[in-house]
Structures are given as C-alpha cells and as structure tokens.
Image (cartoon, rainbow, N blue to C red; front, top):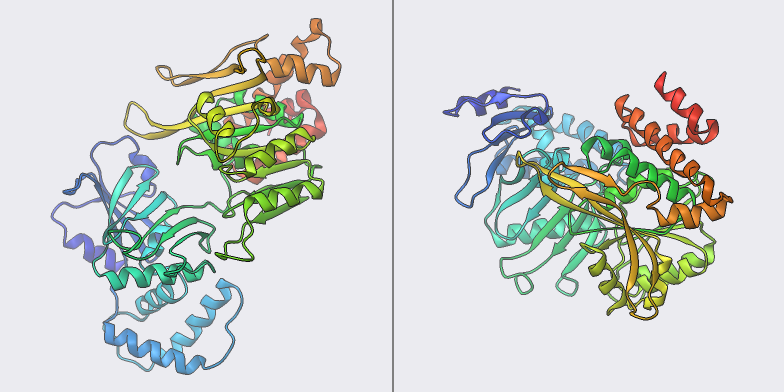
Length: 513
C-alpha cells in the first residue's frame, strides 16, 4: 500500500479510508479512498470539476518507464516464441507471471517487480487503462465519449468524471480496436458500430472513427454482475415490494406473458433476471439476446445469441425467435424487443408459448404505440396476449441518491372492438411522496379472478383463497429479506424448497432458519 501512502502524502486535504463506500451514501460532501484490490484504490471527492462532475481518481502502482516496458515486451515475446498459450484467463495469468518472474529477475527496474507485473498483465491480458473501472463493483456504467476524460455512473455517488484521460486520436482508436478484438467482434472502417460483450460479460457499444463520431471513437459499457441481483435484493432496495414480488411469482407459476418496460438504465434486465427464479424449475427456457446478459438458474436452459457479420451469416433476434418456436420451449425470454421480432413474440404467445422480454416504453400508451407502429407492427387484436406490463424507472430520492422503482404494473384485459382502445387495469401503482408501491387490493386483479381462478377451478365465492395465497408468497419473500438471504442462487434454492413444502410450511421453515 506504499503507493497509496505516497499518493495521500501529495494531497493538501487528507481523505478518509473506508471499507465500503456505501457508508457515505447520501452524503453531499465526501473525500474518501476505498480499496478495489491490492493494486487498485479509488479516491472519490465531492469536488466538482469545471464540467460539473464530482471526481473519481484511480490510484494504481507507479508504471515502469516506456523504454523498460518495451524491453520487457521484447524479452517476453522471445521467451514465448510459438508456444500455444493456456486456454483459460486464470491459466494465462499464471503463465505470464511465471515467465515475467524469470525475465525481471535479470533486469534493473525503476519500480518494484510486482508493479511491473501488474501493469503488464493489465495491458496485455485484461482491458488496459479501463481495467480498474471494470473491477470496481460500485460502477454501473462507463462512458468514453471521445477524446478527453472517461465518465462513470457510480452506484453510491452517481455520475462522476474519472482521472483517466485520452488526449491523442491514435491512442483512442488503438484502445477501441484492442478492446473490440477482445470481444471477438472487432470494429473496422467497414463496420464502425458494434454491440458486444466484454470477457467479464459487460455489455459494450463501440463507435469507431472520426468520420462516424465527430469527437472521435467512443464506447459505452454497461457493467455486468456474474451473480445476478436477486428478487430479495430488489425488495431490500425498494425497487418492488414483497407483495408485488409475490404477485409476479404467482403469475409466472401460471405461465403469464410479461414485459418489463422502462427507459434506458432503468434496471429492466436486472428485474427480468431476478424474476426468472419464479419460473417453475421443470420448464424448458430459451433466452434470446444480442449480448448475453440473462442468467437462468434452470437446468433445461438454451441460451442463444445473435451474430453480426455485416453480411451473409448474420443471425438476428428475429431468426433466433423463429427457430425457438421449433424447439418446444415453455418460456421464451427475449433480451430486448425493438424490431419485427416483436411480431414473432406475439405469435408465440398466440400459439401457447409463454414470453417475457424487456421493452423501451415509459407507460402503457407508449408501449401500445410502439408495439403496433413501425417496425414492430403487432396487430392490435393480438395485444391482449400480453398479460402484464411492468413499468420501472430510475429517479432520485430526497437525499439525491439514484434509485430504481417499479412505478406501475398493468394487467391487459382486451381490446375494445368499438373504440380499438386497449382495456387494462393498474394492479400496482407507485406513491412517490411515500416511496411505496401500492396494490389496488382484493377484488382488483383481473388475472387472479378471471384467469388463475378459472385454471384452478376456484369459484367466485372462494376467490379469497387466491389472495390469501398471494399474501403467503409475499410473507415468504419478506422473511427471506429479513433473514438477509440475498444471493441469487440461494434465493432460488429457497423458492424450490417452498414448492416442495407448500407455502404455509415454507413460511414456518424460513422463520426458523
């Protein structure tokens, strides 16, 4: 940690050291350092730059001189020769360290040997100057808008400007080319715009060349978590209530079709990932995505991804969705519907397949307009195949923290033949003043009373049984949150246990864990 002490020693105002930046959540004024790993520390300051952003400074070990790095690279290349590298990234890292140890033992260096190894591996095996941002678990988005600073969205402090800056156009282009090659979807002048996944699973959009982007090549990264956020975490964040989560569980048990809707960065994919744990475990699921983000805990899961070649051999969402219908899935999950694949999704619903997807729409009116308009063009008479439209958004709370909330859940009933309007019921709505998600109450759910009741043979006078069941599901999830059962796969195991024991017994069981 000597390099961190050296950094602090050069500062006029000394920052505090914190184990977890969440301890500063809601603070208007902060000056702190937190650790990402042994070689990466982060200094966050509420000191606004000339462009109005708070500061995010990456603290790394000192870098060797350029001529030293050149010599090390040459020696390393001679040692490696034509040998095939190991397959996994962990094996590659061990292999590089082993070779570097021998090379560096014979050299005089301006910095410590372990610092040389860190920078060599960071640049050659990982993602170079942006690797610290990838490793920081508190970052949501990374944006390099062209020449100049890299910007981020921090989970605790919101939008920030980083200390990482690119000032030369060739350096910027080299970075974009290098990163895109690591995704196996390289950019070029013929193919300047590429959507891909980084090795850690994060979604990235590349734009290459000044002829396409006036400020030069740029990229945007949406960070990916290897273990998805669970439904109990979403409840603890306040994104949804236990009752709403129990309602979704009940609906997915019955194979309802559901779209998670919202604006960009409203958390749609996170919610879709979390609620897949409610799909019964013995069903076959097919996920269809442009870039792989969905994680499904089910064993009978087919994960399909588009392929962009820029010509013959391109496989689009539309192609994968059509192929999926021949594979007899119980549930089809589409990463994002935005084109004619939407029409195929509604045909899948029409033929008895259950479908879930994310969709860009802020409210039910926009949803219907986009679905029925060009280029999706779903016939309005098909819209009632979609049972539930869930809308969520990102907003700021009273302390200025960025939060995500489900703001409405609409049950779609039918299309009025006289007016051609879509008839729907808002079963859950959001009260912004109380920051609460409110259920319309017993007797208000069309799906419970006219779909689920009929399927289960529950008479109108006994309809209260289904609302009692809904409350039991909510209670089960509320206790899991209370007991801090947050890991995605642990939550899945508890939901499986609830299916085995029955809800009443499962509630008693989790109370005693």
